[in-house]
Image 1 (cartoon, rainbow over the protein chains, first blue to last red):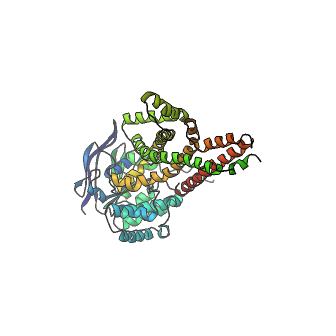
Image 2: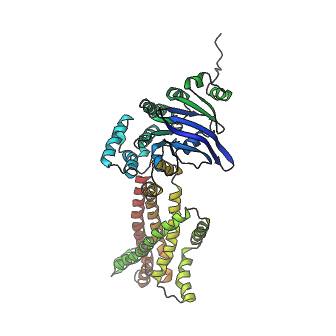
Image 3: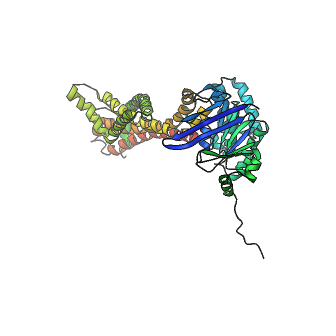
Length: 248
Length: 222
């Protein structure tokens, strides 16, 4: 497999505050990389840098061998789904999905609509194409947002805590869609707090803390026998000791 | 009874409607001038230049603090004394109402622009839209939907405030009402009640219809 994304010595600061320090990641085509870490560790910022939504202060990022630049044509190779869905509230579901391919890629409208309907069917939202975003549940909105990113045919998809704002019952319907994309061989980088999901979908886990990569491992090794104490400590925060006294 | 019969004497009804027409005309012309200026000023106010923002802020506060009647006097009487301008009451009214409307409109536009979450720009950028496309297809349509009901409300406020322009000699609906009441003082001493009641109905009809449209649009787009 060839390298799709190369990040070398990436540094990101907000003023004096260093958010990402000397990040080195290579993502191969078809690989699913899950990024874990405590809140505020810089993992969302990392995705935003890859999507050229942030200025960077050092290092380089290459997509398909070309540098990532804000507004660059090659940025179409990267698609991103955000925590807050960010559908366009004035457009219905179908128009939300088709606006970018029609206006940005100048594709034929009819053809794009056909494709959008096909994708909506795949995420179980065929009956919603005429709905406005405010008429949808959070899970439905997020599935539309995924379709909207997908239709641009990005080579790399970034998921920034896409289930963090959802009610627990809706998490699954969104994660199923992401799992399905993994089965189709999409290259993805996923920031999530859903550990079970991370373990199920990841080819590789990268843990970030304090703006640095602290561990890079296979999901099996990471969740059962992590190399670093920091990772072990982090994983412990997701388990609870049983406080009920055993019956005598 | 109650002096309502006076309204139907001679040309009184037509004169009152013409008066309302004069008031609506001043509001409408002022609104048509205010909207484009307000949009330009609002975009500047939402922008980054601190000097322009401060100047516009002062302008907005000045217009808001100043009672409209004082502004009318300032433009109608003041400019004649100082610069020898001979502005008619109607032109002075349009100037004052346009200054006021542009100030209020700019604040509405600024508010509408600021109310658009940063994420709308980011998700647009992430989908490959250029900044210009983002404005054309995503930001402006959302702002317009927010602004239309608000600007209709501004028009109704203007219509109500036109009742002040009789103070600089413009014959609008309230002035006509006063004239009719004066003329019928002997024959219908109750005319003040009936005629002003009718003026109330006229204002109400004009503003209520507009408010209904605004509310309808607001519900549709909120």
